[in-house]
Length: 351
Image (cartoon, rainbow, N blue to C red; front, side, top):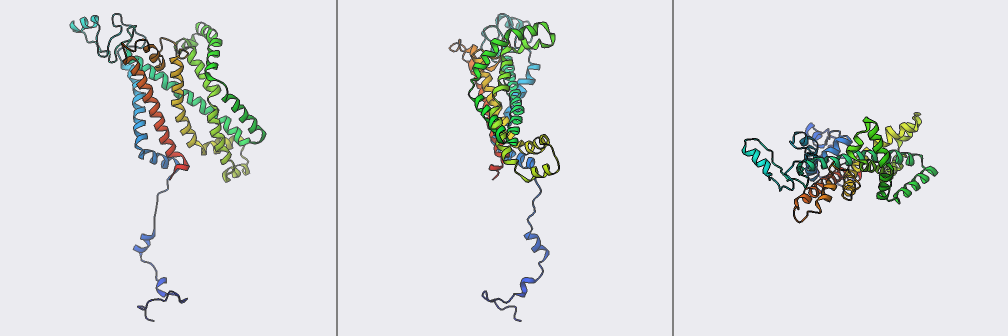
């Protein structure tokens, strides 16, 4: 047979050269290997490539250090009133402090000045950021705990129970949160103050104030409905998968199926939604403190600091700019980082 003859494409005769074993280099050129990558590794890999999300995470870490670590080493406390140091400008000393400096004593400067009561603005900004971050994280955890449980049960059981539970969610959506906070403050103020005065263990109530406790209660009562709806939609799509059918065939209880299989497979959505809930909680707390129904004095909050600075806006504008800029940085950082988490862990956005 002439091997150099060109094959006829229309011929049904087989070409012997097609059956010659491939060489090793030819085999390697056809093999495309890829390491097995899990959900978390793949998600964090995509997150690390998102420069905006990484910068936002870095800013969040700096904010946490500024709020929780630096006050430990700062020479002033948030409630300390320094006589003669009222209304100081940034990096300014009072006359008494200047005299002490001339005597050789080292005086730490007031980086952002002082307020009308002689309290250092910088340390109050640190503590205010700590309060806002704590409220955001704790409130988001409460929303995650209540909303995920409620939504998972509603979506898994389905039927009439699902309809009734979702109608209850619609009712909660219509309740004004600020009105509930005011009612709770009026109702709980004196019982909680009496409890703090009689039982030493509850003395912390006077420190954080009744308003902050009411904010946590309202978050637990009202703000979980969005999380419940998101989790319910996830469970409705996941409960028809084969692994749920297999778990039922093996005799797994409904509680185990919900906790071990369904919520575990929706963990990416839960993390993203919880992260995006933090800036919403921070903004709500700052707004309530701004109008005077949040954190009680002398405990600072970014909202209460901005509220107290309104009266001296023309004379001391930096007192308003400092908490306003801090609120903006915190909320923007969490929003951008939450968007990065959503882009990294949302399967619909994988490509």
